[in-house]
Length: 182
Image 1: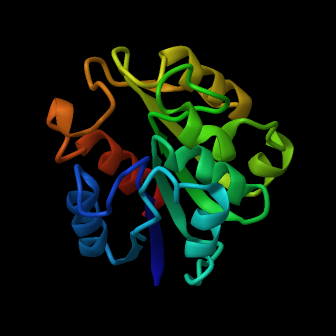
Image 2: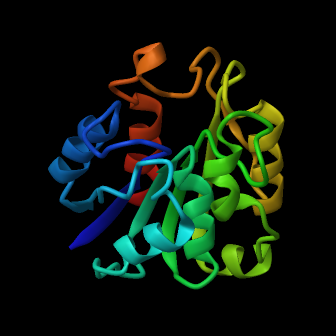
């Protein structure tokens, strides 16, 4: 069976924003959807805690992964050691953000990533970003795409792809997955 892993962002939950909608669409396409609840309080949001949560899932090499916000650097850490068929990174970044989220993102992204290993472990990358994200500067996502050797996909006016901008469905992302990972 095809698998899809959906990773929420900082202080997130798998039943928020567009995650339930996407999970249902992917289930209709025959995917086993794994959407873990990662620790989401400021003191519990550490890379180690999130990695421990993910360990309880048996992910195949044919799994696709979707990460949003903090879920992106989390997946990059996983991808240094694990193979995935395709990875979709939404509002992603590496390094610090230069805002109030830096204490949380520090253990996930304030490091040098092994880009060679990451690129060897994933068949296809897709990096989606907005031009008006209030938390992740577009330059951060553009640099992420460069590090992965792909062109970023700009979705104008999408903010942080969250409830603040009404992102409860995400047709562009689903269409990408449906076209390229089916």
